[in-house]
Image 1: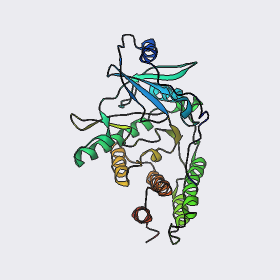
Image 2 (image 1 turned 60 degrees about the horizontal axis):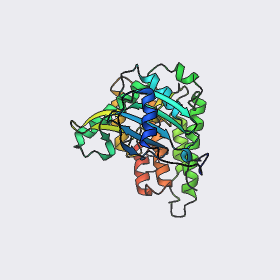
Image 3 (image 1 turned 180 degrees about the horizontal axis):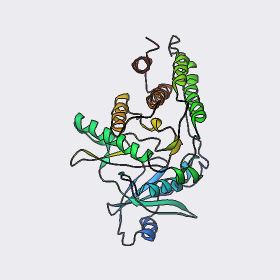
Image 4 (image 1 turned 135 degrees about the vertical axis):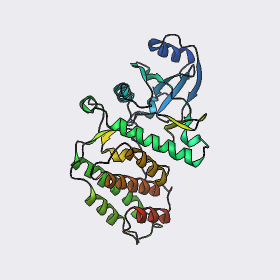
Length: 307
């Protein structure tokens, strides 16, 4: 068993738009755009056309359309965040035409953290700034986002419990079926321990969903945090589930410290955070990206039930 997204129209044509077509879309919302300077396909589901160094036209790739991705959802979130003091792209326009769905937005300066070779103290400061940014995003008024019907997710503590349980189960089933996985690792005991610790009350917020080093941008001139991009996979759940990176547990710890710097955490926040981290590590193991020893060390560090 492996984890995979289901794409609704995998055989759809996926042409790269001509510069003329991109500029036509951009000028509908930003008159005066002159040229397309680059095309970025690193996002997988979307294609981003960089225009005049300051504007991005982001298009949905038809064969990569999946239920959890939505440019319309991303447009709503960026518009909602415009009044908040957060470093995210500013929405300039959204449209859906017969041949393309697209966003026009400002370009976050800099490069992704995963590409930035910066000293460790400055890298930590970037991750802490990312954590603080996530908290500001989570603390914006949620009513419009909740009532939009565009953002799927949880309604409360019961849904959170089902989400965490399902996350553990999906990874554990894969690992239990692996003949090379150690049979003495009581992963179901780990899951039960995390589930027992979940808070009885949990007000969901809109989450970025993957605020890792590929979406966290850095200004290379000063090695400082410059912004967070890509809200296309946003969903609603407990805020602690957003304060984690697929890159490393230590990155997630630095993000948590930045989040905590803006005030006390809610009761049970760190319990949900630990559960999310452990699910992430087990998913990585199920995909062959974590060894049993690495998983055992992470579990021992966070929960210590395996010795």
